Amino acid sequence: MTFRNGLDSLLRPEDSVLVLIDHQAYQLANLNSHDPQAVVNNTVALAKLAKAFNVPTILTSVIAERGGLLFKQITDVFPGQDVIDRTWVNTWEDKKVVDAVKATGRKQLIIAGLWTEVCVAMPVIQALGEGWDVTVITDASGGSSLESHQVAIQRMIAAGANMMTWMALAGEWQRDWARTEHVKELTEVLISHMAGSGIAYLWEQQLLNTPVADNAS
Image (cartoon, rainbow, N blue to C red; front, side, top):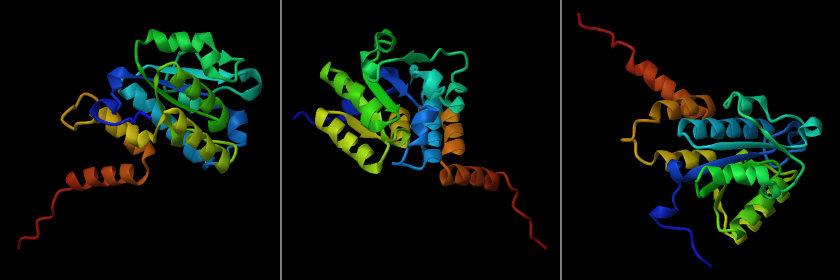
């Protein structure tokens, strides 16, 4: 087994491409591994994060006329961008999606989707077999049951996939706070989607901008 470790194994925005798979109404209706609201929040955060770091993002759905369009909160992040609608259950068997990913020239493939046991696991396992460096964002994905989600993660790890959450990805892409070109956009994502940390940041800014009372007599 080859371990994924060392500095070069960390994700870099300039080498990353994100594929968001089947975040649709039908799948969300039977999402039981997570709080559905949390998955929507995390997926939108992931989409905004990719946009902030100029990471190409491929949007894809499966039979949208029956399963529903991708969540509006996601497509609003990428106005005007086409969503690739598939008949293939396995995204990696759809030539349009694979060609779009290859056209970016990126080698670090990042995937999130619904459901984990089907629409995430299948393309991840195939892409790994073709030599891609694949990361799954687990909290922007979800399964029809907790068991389904967890077993899928175990299966993908056994195949060589890397597992992360969207906040861990943010840390690896930012890497150094001296890199200021994306800090403003990243901060806005944290404010909107990182709950207590976002509120704490706003409070900090409030305190920094509140004049100290002069109690001198």
